[in-house]
Image (cartoon, rainbow over all chains, first blue to last red; front, side, top):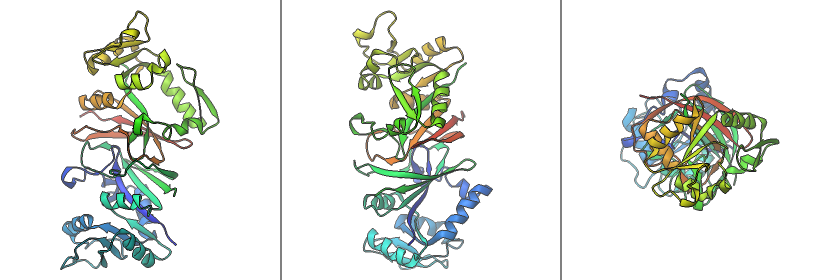
Length: 184
Length: 197
């Protein structure tokens, strides 16, 4: 059985996007990767069996290029209240899940088999999964920038602390990749 | 001229203290290793990995003065009356406590702001480093473009609530250069140079 992995790029001050969803340079390492960055990307693509994301993240990708250039040839589970009339135009398989995060993760795990389920945002879905103890691993790509404002990844979590185990630190150029196991 | 630097332990979700200033879950790395690091000031010995010990000793040996806030001073109960890292300490406050205001006090109270406190520290440190403490003082320094270096001791925990280091900034984004990544036991030490625009 694979792991459920939250994978996000984050600024040093904890933002995964700036104001108005500005990228703020957080994904330069991904779109213009160094050889080490490419290794991390290849590892992700090879190990991913399914993707889970929120409705807002789905729409952002849809507006960006309609998932035409999606390197992840795996089923994408979208957590939403409303199924869109017209799914994105690319060849990606989208499954719209309207009965909650737990079911979305369950379905994604079944399809992923031995591979991992990657949670690709947004922050709200990540927070719900963390609180529901549905994440096994958190992989953060820490970018050397302070954005000052935007969308915080770790927000509205409450007062219960969550212990992690830092299993890997990988230093790239202009990014440090951290892998944490969530201790349940 | 010495650089202006900060070094604090931070949770993955960005907190430097939990609820009610509780730092117990953040500071576990100070006792997870087998190398003794006595603090230059009070009678306190950390036990950390040898990599962390080297880093702390190096950081502290370069330190010439500390500038911090009144909250830091009060919460720590004036660090038991001794300068925390054995160097002159400047406290930015509107209301200096009279009991610590005497000749040769380890604490200097500065009532006219962070910039003034840093100027006073610069006058005595020579080419040594000025350490900045307290989240609000650090935030002011970041906004004023005064900070040269950020040291984060990143610990593997999500606290969920407490005092955020990078809060109330509402700035333009600030670019950093990640100059060092060092793995200790239960902590990763990250050093950033602030790129001044």
